Length: 285
Ligand code: FAD
Image (cartoon, rainbow, N blue to C red; front, side):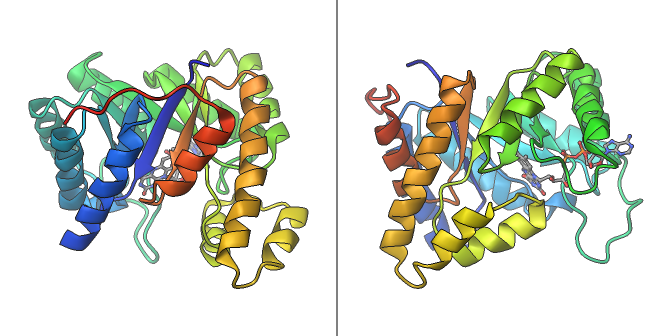
């Protein structure tokens, strides 16, 4: 089965965190992903950490790296500096998002209000040099006026020059398939790759889901709650649920899977084994 697989990391804050990330990235590199991605704190809060993680992964693995770049709070000049740095180290792919406003932040800071504006600017300044991934929301973005407006927003990102999209995570495959239908109706000709969240810890999952507006279906939540502090059983049940989700997505035509690893390799690797996705290729350092 030929699918586009990618793994997302966040930039660690400590040397120990970087060592941990490298250890897990090397294990995931054996799965021959199309790319690793590294998140970027809105307003540039992780600018240095993201660059450091991108450099480390570029130098120590044979996998292309796609840094995220968040529009919020950034001046055009900062964007040019960052793009030049990435060009210098051979980066060819970016994940371009708006980012989330830090609590209490003024909305008007920076030169870009929405992700499509940053995508247009990158295209204007660098033509087709970068392959650009945009964000998509099968359960719709929490700030969207309505579902149709959010689909039109993805269309704006497509028309601004995005090459493909990665979705927020979700647990209901129908959300994805209905979203694809809505995008088709709007002639959005982007591969839309589902974002997959392995279930590692219930409290974190609940917190993230509240923040990003992803639904944990009641039946799933109640089952996960029943494991209380039995992390091993919770993860094993979560693995079953998420692998069934992935099976349905793949059999319904999803072009790939993007794993939100939270800097852990184990569950993503187990999921790939359960799904029998072709991987094994030697790792060259
Ligand atoms: P946009 O596309 O700008 O949309 C934001 C909201 O504004 C939506 O509700 C949209 O419908 C609405 N909107 C857009 N344009 C208009 C308009 N012209 N008029 C009215 N409404 C409009 N966050 C980070 O901080 N760092 C990361 O590294 C990061 N990586 C991510 C990776 C993926 C794959 C995904 C799915 C999300 C990621 N996020 C990240 C989270 C993301 O930044 C937030 O979800 C953010 O709130 C929206 O980003 P966006 O790029 O979708 O924004």
